[in-house]
Length: 278
Length: 280
Image (cartoon, rainbow over all chains, first blue to last red; front, side, top):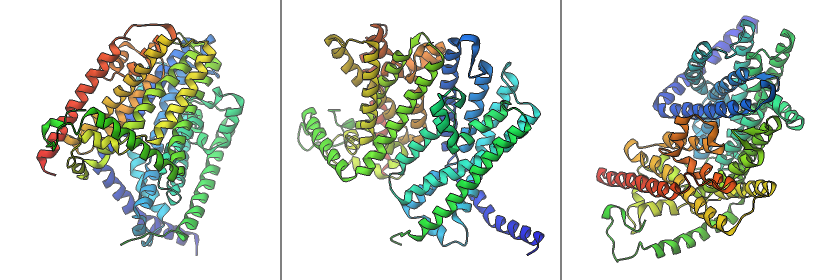
């Protein structure tokens, strides 16, 4: 097949999944209230963190911590919580729920790839969260003096990193959802993943402030590519363009590895799935 | 809890919902729950373990912060750790007995399943709660809390005099009841809105403010956490007493607890009455 032919085929394949995105949007509009939940949770956790770090900086000698000024830290917290909203794609709930209820059978008889279907269905959730979280953030960055807004290059790097972060977030949540094949109590697993991801992604404490051992663990896990990496690019905490590309490359490697793992485990899991009843 | 809701449930014989019977049933049903644990060991490990992981990481965050600064809002490392650990205790105790309220807010009203709590000769609220007595997830919270508090107290050289213990235990119970009240209030909203999970989650999230000393927050926020959503009484007020002997607000604790319970139980009763009249 020629290259344009492959492209047309890919476009045609993608178009089959667009109704999934529309359906995802419809679901979202049905459950508007759960959107509010996400926003209120993000608002509370951001506020707690802002106050906590304000108090911490009041006691910090020299006014910097881990090389960050107070204003940079405030920006760090705002941007990292924005990213967390982009990562709240509900994929783990959907996948685990469909496995638990057996609804997954319906999606398996369709001539579609289930992981792709889930990906397209979560796009409206991510998009809506991006708008809902992005606009207030942009307003804050412009209106509050002293907050560290990004330079043009930082902004471009950040946007690329945010897209990769969303992909990693999808893969991680898909993997977590698939634990529904192993246990019906996926609530506990989802809760643990939430806590571990929040900590090791650098959302709660920047990795640069962690003691060496914990920081090494954090750098070896994919979570830091979800929050810490994009925020560093946003704040311009990189030497030069090459280092920025290196950060993006690491993220891309995690995307490839985790999506590959999703596809592999999915095939294995479906092979041994049994759904009862009719 | 001794009075059947709104008198709508007909009582076949007097005293069937008496406090003694409730206590006996609670004891019995808790035993049943604990038996269930031995049957579903993985569930127990996942549920309780998830809280151990989460709370341990929260303690680690405090540890990391104090690597860089000596005090936060005037509190030293082990004092903040004590406060954090203490905040787990009322939450864990509440969690142990009232977790089923989440299901009321999430789906029981929405799916019309709530009626089955109304057709038995027991207070409906008691019946709802009884489904998850001794819910294992709460054990993880209590355990982590006890370990954290004991460690912090030993590092602080805190002497637990009999008076302090005699005050501390009721304070934990009051704190748990405040958590229960907030949860009950927001779960009861589902009688009007069919599901209130988001409101419950939001109220539950706000409890996170109580993990740190109130001194770090602005005045209006402190006021919000002291009176409308009285989470200050679940950790900051008791911990200030145990650490510094500060009795400011301490004697408000029982008052706030009783008022919170009365308000939320009132809303719950009104909601139950409303549910019945819709004839779902």
